[in-house]
Image (tube, rainbow, N blue to C red; front, side, top):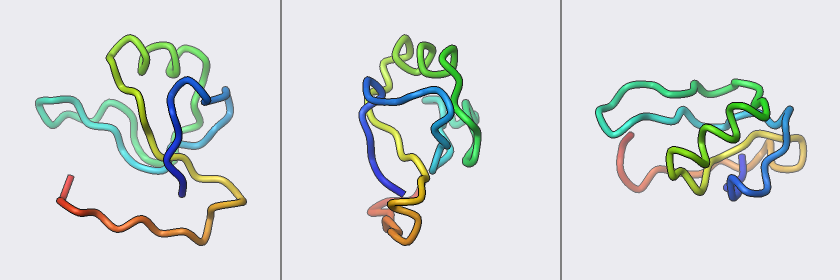
Length: 68
């Protein structure tokens, strides 16, 4: 898993962590394959950084400082 700017995302990237709204609702779940419309929506919501899963970083585990 790696942290990446939403501006560097490509359609086909895989979401590494679930994205929640401010009210705690799930916006996109872990493992979702990102489409261009999802990426545009993330930008429109003001989300700037997400986690993605890929082959290069599959062995990297990022520990939470606080719980989701």
